[in-house]
Every structure is written in C-alpha cells, then in structure tokens.
Length: 146
Length: 54
Image 1: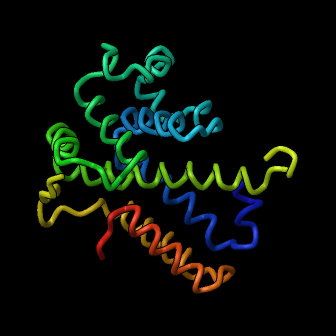
Image 2 (image 1 turned 60 degrees about the vertical axis):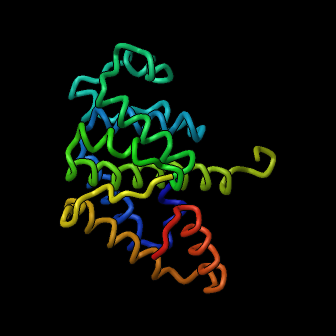
C-alpha cells in the first residue's frame, strides 16, 4: 500500500518506515505492541490488529495475553505499568486534548520522565500510522467497497 | 482539567526518534500536491484537535 500511495514520492516513503523503526528502538516492545494492538481495536484497523511485531513476541508477549487485551483493566495478565500505559494510550487515541495529569503521572511514575517522553512520541507514530492506513484503504478501495 | 507540566525541563525525545520525526514532517511539508490553503486548514484543524497552542 505504501508503494501505491507514496510511489511518486520516493523521498518520503523511506522516512515513513524509518520513523516506525525508530519508535520500536526506544520503547519496550511489549508495552508498545500492547498499545499498537489496542489502537488497532479502537480505530478498527484490521490489518494492524492481526499482525504481530517480532520484537514483542521475542520479548515474551504471547497470544493468551493478546486475547485478553480488551479486558486489560481487570485481567491479571496486565500489571500496573501495562495498565497505566494502556489507559494513557486509550485517552491519547480517543481525545488527546483530554489527557489528564493523573493519566500522565501514572505512566511517568512507572517509566521515568525520559522513557515517558519517548513513549508518548512513539504513540504518536503508531496512531498516525494506523490512521493513515485506514484513510489510504478507504481512498484506494474500489467504489463498490466503500 | 489541570495543566501541570508533565515532563521536566531538559528531558527530550530520544534523538533517534526526534530526528526521524523531524525528517518525516519536513518531507511531508515539502510535498506540493495539496494547495496551500487546504494545507493550512488541515494544519489548523490538527492544532485544535491536539490542543496545540504553538
């Protein structure tokens, strides 16, 4: 899809991929994968919902945990750090301007200020990527599938 | 809603991601297939959505 959309902009596509790679290099891959999958569910991005990121799986994330992701507020598979990050992620996607200090402090307390800043920047990358994909899918779909 | 500073002064996004973000955004801004008025409307709509006062 990237080739179709950005095929006439050869300078842009590599930067788009480099951005994603950079996000995964600086944030815990398990936390980031949980957030990526949660974003996919919230936005209805089927492609992102069904794929997996190798570094997260290699780091120990399993399918049983992923299957319980919709129940993250109560499931024992998710610890306090995961819950803080997922709560922040959900608010970030649904209404970023509505992020409260409480949600931010909860993540910062678990990650520390530097990792918190990196986490927020990485979330921006993940969300942007999925919103772009959804828009591109709609624009590129045959008219009778829209 | 309270608006306390959430990240201390001096804490920056890791350079590998900050540089990648800068490069991507600069490349997008350089694209010229969209007219400048529509581009500015989109930029302002995004600023409002993100509550960005810059």
